Length: 139
Image (tube, rainbow, N blue to C red; front, side, top):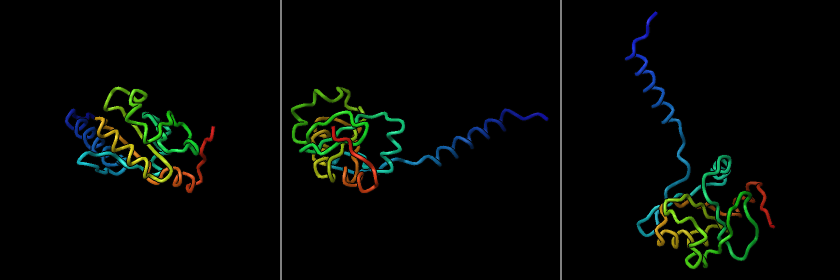
């Protein structure tokens, strides 16, 4: 039995389309001042942490604890003075969180204004994280 090259190409195309359509988009797009960022749930963040490819930044002040694998604690109201602590590449993937989302939204505004384009935020912050039964690191 001989399978034609056309048939194999068709099968490969069909499989690619199926796999692409099955992939979930992580997060929901949000907009601020005409610029966009993504908002993720606790479940989505947990999945993202399995193959972490982003800088996780706690922007809450005062410090009350970090989500495990947090890379940096940078208070939301100090970000504009401490941009040198963040990647120089404006397309670097940054995910910020705070206690409930208010300070994180302010941090997102500052980062958008600074030119960052790949911003993410945890919806509900550490409050949602704890409500989902997760822990915070306090040291």
